[in-house]
Length: 381
Image 1: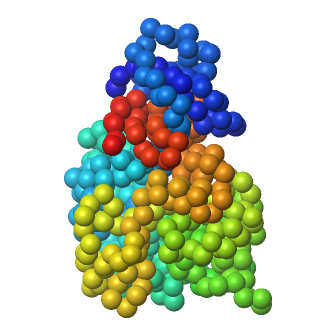
Image 2 (image 1 turned 90 degrees about the horizontal axis):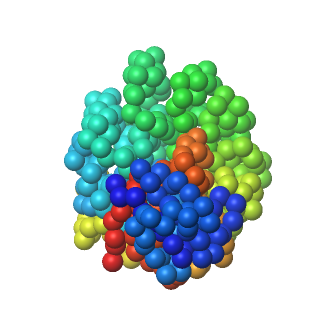
Image 3 (image 1 turned 135 degrees about the vertical axis):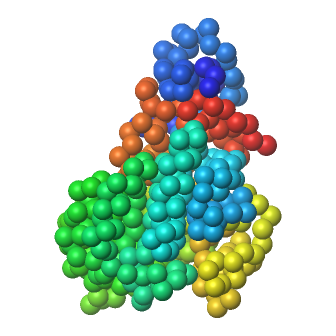
């Protein structure tokens, strides 16, 4: 890592935009901001010429990238490829996501994360297990042969996972509230998704410790007047967080507007749900028994089922700003600060003294020009 002073930037701070400001990076952390940073003029200086300086993006749902899928090869090398594929799009940290699989693959994914972190892959935050504790009624592209209820032995190995942030997406109607409470007490970030639960069951899961909802509106029934279901509970619960896939395929603009209007500020965050095509020229791949093809920016199986996305994070942010009228500072935070808040990581996703120097240089027309991960800089064309 190289200490430096970043000057003449429009800096996104937790509570404001600081125009023509400076940020000092020392020992991989943000050491000073504004006038205090300018006094550290002995540091090597990088003039950002009026560009944005943002917290690095954080993606909590990443299935693949760079031509590889985590499910296909749950190993440290796959994770490194994924990190390299997503970083040019502004993502400095991510949760590799394993789609419903058997216990052997789940434990291999955990071991891969441990190894990657031991090898110094700071961008790997932990592990997101999307399933297999899901509802067959709302399986999406998941292989329902793997679906099952949580068992005591699952709790045992999850409790001992020791792989950083551990997120688990489950369907609340397929588990007891006692199980959900046990997971939450263990520190697992329980997300609700791929679910046909009624509103009451969903509220009970939230009360037991579930923290939010995976790809809101997708893999859940629509809101009906007499059956608001999991979606109604998600939109009306002020304390929970919701992930949004803003790729022009998963969500209608009105659905995005509804989520932002219903949820308190800071509770909506962006995810990509990215597959192996991101950061590669791949147009087709196998997912279990399915062939998935990229057509017009959308990934679908032979029967038309959406299969993750070909979305990268800077494209999601651009779409929020340019097509959905979201204020730039809020769109930036949806990709950085607010997912970090869900994880409980106050050292990430923000430009603040003492936070990790995970930074993103963005041009006024929203092109990624450089990123820093714990002070390590990469330039991007």
